[in-house]
Image 1 (cartoon, rainbow, N blue to C red):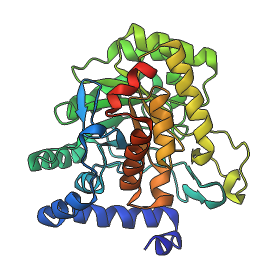
Image 2: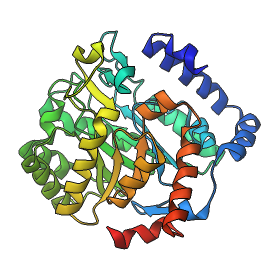
Image 3: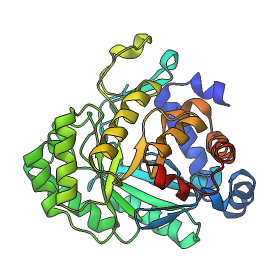
Image 4: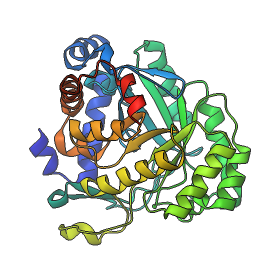
Length: 345
């Protein structure tokens, strides 16, 4: 199946996979029994973060299931949480195709999707239906602005999306770092970010998703504003515009790069955050393919870890392999609970 999908156009393969997972998600008994077999349920993996309880620290990153179509499947495959979106207030088609490219030589992807999604109202109905089923999956919601909304009115879009879904999401993420919406990354800059964060209020945990391409000074300014506005934490990092060291002929394509080439920079950003703001809660994402990658992020100070491109290349059993491997590493280190890692940070 994996080989067949890689023979297809990348976006068609993604759509087919998501449609199959969405179909599976809607079949209660056919979902829950495989879930019992696939999920790694072990109290040693439990994590308390963002004021929430997670059965394990491994999550699905935003972008894979933009419209919250397959939440049941993500639970059954073993994820401790899933982040849907990026969702915008109004539906939008995104950028013209082709807009998704595989770089197998680099185990990477380039995308310039452009926040294609069906809008918050469609997602609201799906999230409500999923909540009614009672499956214990923490759900994050990644929010963005519509492409045609001017930057000076960006806060209105984030607030509209937040208010529509506030009762259904467990935590929320402001995406100000996608390189595929013109001008969006401007919102990471001090004055713009300060104004945006001053207008966003919620009782739910609120995080900011940042780019890996920020300079140390720019990152410090983001951290200052996160503290000033009392955000719960950061999602670090989004895709990069860097093409350093790539071997694939597709490296020339415009868009954000994800996958193995992002791992080093994502880890550097995590180290910088924990050095500057020890204890700040971080969901680390970027280049996670192995249990060792997950362990490295947790030891470096991440509260939680997300995968995206690794799932594309490694397949649906990746969550189980990562969590089994993480337990083995914990046993080798004499760690009885992930909570014991906190004093090491």
